[in-house]
Amino acid sequence: MKKTLRLILGDQLNLNHSWFKNKSEDVIYFMTESQEETGYVKHHVQKVVAFFLSMRNFKRDLESQGHRVIYFQIDDKVNRQSLSDNINKIIEEEEIEHFEYLYPDEYRLDINLKTICNNLSISSQAKDSEHFFTKRDDVENFYKGKKEMTMEYFYRDMRKKHEIMMLNDKKPEGGQWNFDKSNRKKWTGKPPIPKFKGFDKNVEEVLKQIETMGIKTMGRIDQEKFPWPTSRKECLEVLDYFCTHLLIHFGDYEDALHTDEKFLFHSRLSFAMNSKMLSPREVIETTLDYYYDHKEEIDISQIEGFIRQILGWREFMRGVYWQEMPEYKSKNELQNTNKLPDFYWTGDTKMNCLKHSVNQSLDDAYAHHIQRLMILGNFALLTMTDPDEVDAWYLGVYIDAIEWVELTNTRGMSQFADGGIVATKPYVSSGSYINKMGNYCKSCQYSVSKKEGEDACPFNNLYWNFLHEKQEHFKNNHRMNMMMSLLKKMNKETLGHHISRSKEIIKNPSNF
Image 1 (cartoon, rainbow, N blue to C red):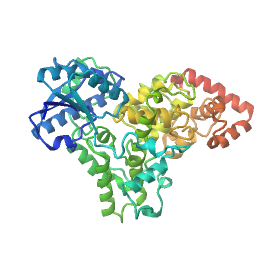
Image 2 (image 1 turned 60 degrees about the horizontal axis):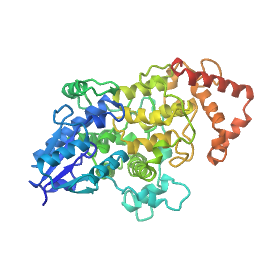
Image 3 (image 1 turned 135 degrees about the vertical axis):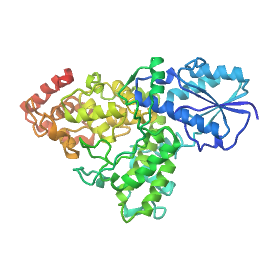
Image 4 (image 1 turned 180 degrees about the horizontal axis):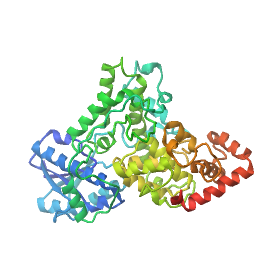
């Protein structure tokens, strides 16, 4: 075998990859922390810490198996802080004859690695990451010739193809494909929510390295009690904890919001999967095994809602990303250009739902999908914020945000900037939806029931103003017909109030 250098990126921490089945003195693995990766967007400090620690643990695991690993920490003097420069340096020093890498999941890295290989004087090869259920172009091929990319049909096909929760090749378990209508309960204090599984690690050393290297971050961190899993062993513990303590009520309350409970029954496994320390297949198989062993206690709606997120949305969104890039990243169908409000960086706002969701994001580098979509994303869209600003914030603030999954969820599902590729209508609402799903409105200084006046919920004004402003964009969207009809029938004085107050909110969002 030629002397080979194999690159492992920070989100490719898959110990079960076929690369690692055999040891060879002729193979060197290379991993690097770099300012190139910490600097393309301002990341949450917990996100940077989590990736650095996970990469270092992965390196130790490989070495314990007998593999040779060259690893550059962020402050190593030999670290040139550039993927290209580091690779070329090692190739020269180690007299490498062949270079290999795993297909990256971000378009910019895909282009970067192809460019690096094109400029090498040695042979090179890319391999599959062996993580996803699908290949990059499976979603595109599935929807060829179809007018709309409805995720539900892709999800059903995935269930059949991989024989997941199927009675036979046509009939799903439980008699229906989707139990989404059972996944919309409001949590009111019962059942009790178990404490989330955390690890309380001291991360003072890595924080000093980040600070010394001048890496600019956002968010907050308790350096003595870092809670996130950063090894495969810890990730498996979180998966086991989800099965034994949280799955039983996950589906019921997956859309719920509550001031006293940040995490409810959510698994918090997204970082473990997006870094590839856990595979989606083993997560699904483990949770399904637990469900089948406890069917008398756990309703099918709980497990189906969980599997739909992984087998359906996660794979679907990745496929859309590879189908639509690089043009997707600049789509702005609604031509929104406003600045993201400053309180997204501070949490300093009078609107209780936003205050809780932003501060949770800054405190924990995490918020669940309804907080991200129907509070933070909803407000950004209703205030007609530039999707570039929204993308940068979401990509930076969340520990599980990697562009392939963040971009399609934010620019597509949340901001409707793709014009309907991902969602058939914009996910916007007045304050009523937020009130329906949780208790944020009860302790807010604004009244969710009021449409006019200084104490009316700003979402109520912004919602109708948005429909008014964007009515040309939605005139041919049949799913918007009812709301556009109500807009046309609205009292002109009432609409005028919505418009004038919305202008104040958009101009000075920090006053609200």
